[in-house]
Amino acid sequence: MSKLDGVVLGNREAALTDQELFSIYAAMGTALRRINGITLDSFGYIGPHGVWTSYPTNRAYMSAQFERKLTEFCTRGGDETLAARLRAGILARSVLLDAADTPRLCHYDFHAGNVLVTPEGQPRLTGIVDFENATAGDPLMDIAKALYYFTPRDSPKRDGLLAGHGTSDRPDWEATIALYRLACTLELWCWFAQIGRIDALPALTRELESAI
Image 1 (cartoon, rainbow, N blue to C red):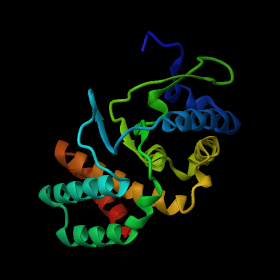
Image 2: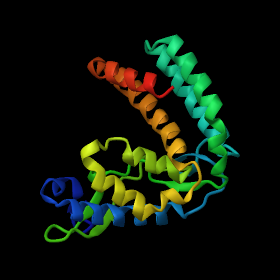
Image 3: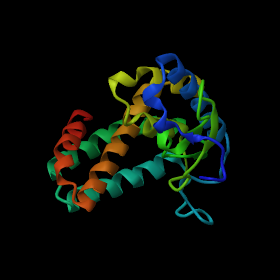
């Protein structure tokens, strides 16, 4: 971190106005779109030597990811009936995954803790860090993950990010983001179950139920 100028955006957000939040998140959306403009040869999670397990299409990649997480969900104590309903709902909406026909670089952990800005005055973007979760996938998956932790109070951030990224240019973008949000929820449920955060599972289970 000391090699890059700036401070973590998360440390400044509480003192920023709605206008400043919109502006910096619009800049973040623009930067993310540039990252997403980098194309790769296949879909899949990126390791130190390229895509680890390659998939020819986004639907093939995401279908494998959904199935892996649904299996883990059941293994870690999740409701098998709910898993079956989720599996059917995902299959019914899987056509949405076909719109991403080119694998693109996705940060997939794009939030205020991984963004650096100027320390004073109107915040300006100075750096983006932590590409550990980088994926060759659909840019809307990147957006869905970025939006995941926003609350209704975060509308300036949400509106800015979407405006900067140009997400609404894509047909069915809201329905596609909703499908990727389901993937995020499944990932988080499995992670909390793995580390013993049992207290967090009921709320995530309710979110999964509402996603069907």
